[in-house]
Length: 282
Length: 256
Image 1 (cartoon, rainbow over the protein chains, first blue to last red):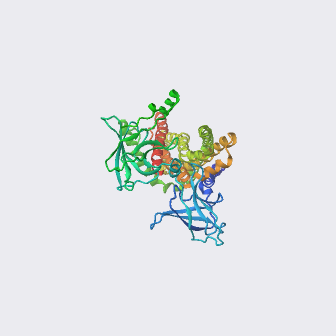
Image 2: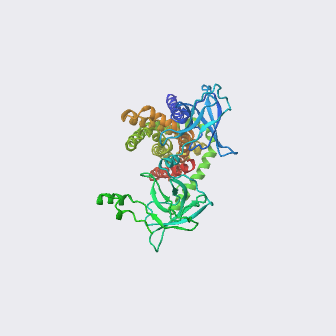
Image 3: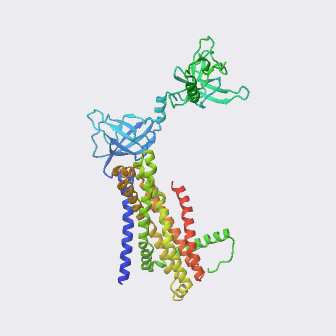
């Protein structure tokens, strides 16, 4: 009898211990620990771009968590994401002209919705809408702005193609922007090596709007910033004739290779010397 | 049921899987009959579960500690030691907890189940039970199977708790990662359904069902010789380990 009791008690203890461990892990080490169970109210916000925002992402005011994202759906009528925010009832005095912004915590962190208070006297009500929002900043866009690259979207159909030959295209890839005066006017449609002339033939797809580029303009492969992507820059010439579809640009300047530059710098001390300047191909 | 005819490796493995599957049906059919032996199930739960706690706690602690140490070393290269809480928790919940617990369970409890039933078979105790109108499946096999099924998730939960404590011990207490970031990063990332429930409950329940089935089946069908019991015990460990690791891949692919 006593022996049976001992193992029965031990088994009971074991089961209790196991479930206690499970309950502890499930509640204390998971995101459940962050989700409030109290009463909450729901407000809507429409974002042009939600980035990587996920459901159950935190909603923060002044950096303090006040609720979470309860649902994200695409608005069927317009190109906007309809985000429902579930905010703790304790924080019910949010001005109705507050601004909702999608932030990223740190460089690699998750995204969350931050609310900055407006100045309105009226509070945001349950079911209300935050009219003023700022979309998520996409890293690519920021880098694009930073390096001045990646401006225009592909303009399918409304473009014409010209060719340019380069002695060296460096790391130029298909899709790289074509710029004039620093503004993107098209993109690189194809890059391939010419088996006969042993140089690179690049097809530039330029927006039809820019159809008054002189046919003696020069094309050069530049790099945006120190570590940026490469792009094709068009420097307009003075000819009265304009480039047409299928034309070839005769004046080109190849990509600068960092190794070449450093080599010239070390050997000659004067990279700007005429005979060493990258040969404009004729 | 005793000596199997000689077959080649693949047909033999297939035949064993098939026989084990049929044996599982026999076991499940006998569950209602074994309800009157519930005390025996509790005794087995004590033996395979509570008695395994020592090895599970010690191993869980050490697995968590070594994980904390290795992560600190790697993450400090990137200056990201604050993420070690997240990685410890996710690695333990998703993989190490269920898999290592199941492997330890197969070695600690599976072997003794096989050896015990195998010896009962070899010494004709099972035949004697049948003669006394006691169903050996309901009295011997089912309680051990159910005990293994119940014990595995509980052991896994204990293993995970100790593992996270071990990771915390090394990372925070010894190596000086900030306590707050350790926990807040963990709670921000770990998901209760995808990580805790999928790992501890789903995976370890499946592992418990498979390991217990292999152990009981090998014991029940062992050749009634001392050599046969030895082989059956070895086969339990080998088959369980392969089944655990293979099923782990399949389950992970499904639960991702």
